[in-house]
Picture 1 (spheres, rainbow, N blue to C red):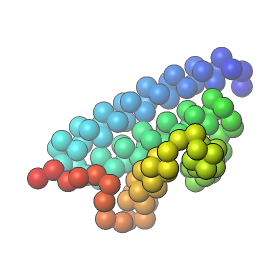
Picture 2: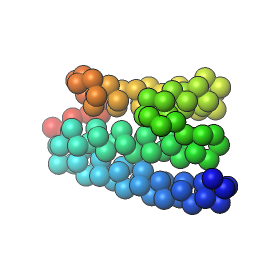
Picture 3: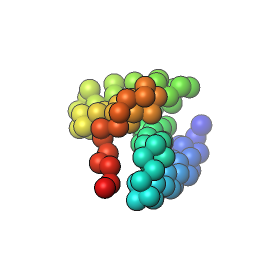
Picture 4: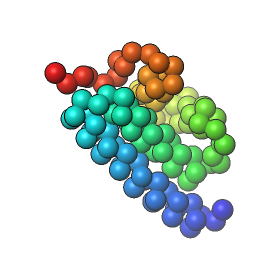
Length: 107
């Protein structure tokens, strides 16, 4: 993939990430927590894919991409460790059925 193609792909994915984040905010305002978590996770995951695609190679699976993100950005200190925690908590809340602890539940 050429640099130009990577940049074009990144632009499209950034828009998708923002759209998913808006969907998460909308779901949260209507107290649909499961939809909020899914949208927030896929927004963050899409952003991770943008980073990997621009500087490195993406993996074929979500776990591989998250692992590469942690190895290349968290362990090297390029990004704060809190970002690893955020994606980890979102993932656990969605795929491991844990009780949501990351997002406040509106009352």
